[in-house]
Amino acid sequence: MKKTPTPTTTLPSSSSAPNAPASTAASDLPIIRIVSEEEEMHVKMELEMEDETHDMLVKWGKEVASDEDYINIAISNGIKHLISSDK
Image 1 (tube, rainbow, N blue to C red):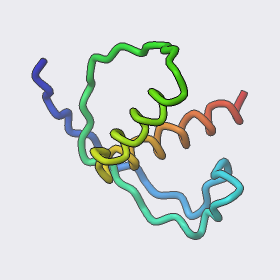
Image 2 (cartoon, one colour):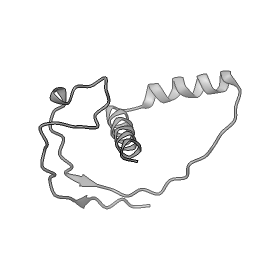
Image 3 (cartoon, rainbow, N blue to C red):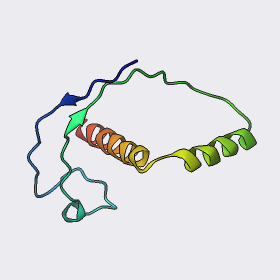
Image 4 (cartoon, helix red, strand yellow):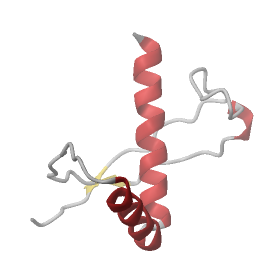
């Protein structure tokens, strides 16, 4: 499936982030601008496996994960935290 970047506008930065995780002070966060976004099709699976298999897959994932992967995970978790704290 071909990915087509969608230009977005820059969001204004706030001097404080009221729903930032407690371990990170809002003043410590740099400005992050969204310069484009892409929609991707994916399937979420619930898996069962032996502990040794899980450990092996985690090891492989850590070997190939990029900095961008970690950034995406952090932003996704931050958004989930913000949404759940607003309920």
